[in-house]
Length: 181
Image (cartoon, rainbow, N blue to C red):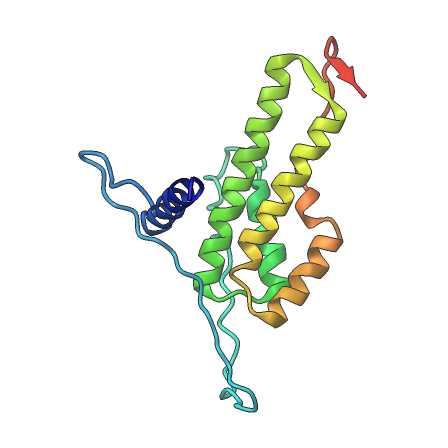
């Protein structure tokens, strides 16, 4: 009996946490819409009607500079290269594409924050960095994979096995930094 009350309390707290998804927006903020992935359900033996693949979308073309001015080559963000690679291989729908774009933008920000923290500390622990990178890659994989159907999952898995999620994680040790092995 002495464990029943704490156990019951834990279950109630867990249920409340599961029902309460996020805090309400602060004063003056607009609530953000939640993005829900498309879910396809098939019954055994039931065939879905054939659908044409969605039309491919491409990144907007840069506007050429006026004559007489030489522009520096535009640097394409890492997430833009990755979304093109994922979209061409996996054939994303427009809803999937926008969700994957956001995940890849967040990914780029996470990598930048990790690199900045290492630079600020002046110390890089190789094992810890590898562990952090692996943890981040697992998270990105799970987030993107949750948006995909079975066929897309297989193609995405092949991209990941080729090292797609490793892009941008390389870290260059600056002079004067301490390296722990």
